[in-house]
Length: 304
Image 1 (cartoon, rainbow, N blue to C red):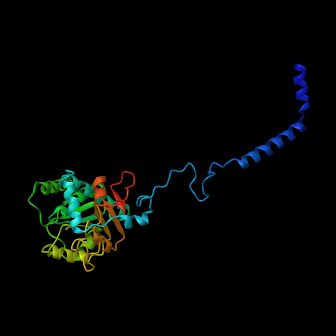
Image 2 (image 1 turned 90 degrees about the vertical axis):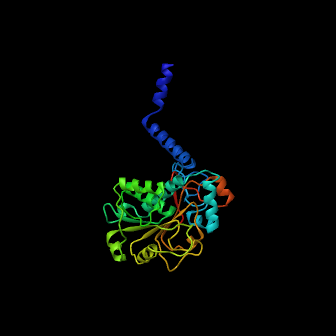
Image 3 (image 1 turned 120 degrees about the horizontal axis):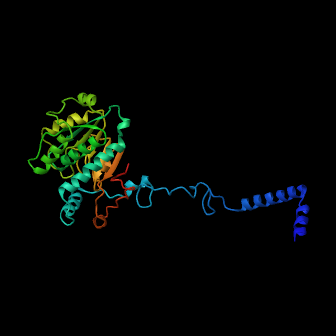
């Protein structure tokens, strides 16, 4: 047995070993060429992602690109928006406080996505939040509180305060976070442009009807002359809920709550977000809202 092993070792001399290595190397090269490469799956297009990359998530409608998401979403009339709200409060037993907190957080989140603090010149950037007497104004107060936590320096103008515990509590929460309240609105647009980098319009919501009275008529006149961007909550104040208002304020950011209203089809600003990730699936199905899926744990979804 030992003689056989020695004979075998003698047979594999250096020259023969080199030839064998060459043959083995060629065989491995051919075999490797035939095997599928780890970077490209056999059933994948060359332009596709590599097999180890996470799948790309579209932020638009169900299976649609983001650019098509806005077209899929249903835009509500004033009566439809009221009916949805009534079911949320009645059949689904949401409280005003719950929906107001979710709406205000959504608005602050949309502001932070459209205008990150790092993109503005102030440190922290100054924001004026103008609040009306109804629930839209309450959304603005909640928004101001969250903006403070997000690294902004909000100031609130709240000229008509309802005599209700809910709104008094929202004011107290802001004051306890050192958010100042203005005694009067700056009378000239240039003053607001100099003092603030953004204005949040939380004056009137989708339920508003009738003539605009003072002091809000004068406030809207001032806002119409601003050069700093305006972010409107749900409806640009002074707009018809369904027809819009080309002569009114023209926000740069619109945050539609629950679902967009028909006036949003007249919106020409840069940023349109859907906020309020709280609509029960059965309610969405009943009204055929076609809401896009929110990405990950986000409470807002960009429509435009």
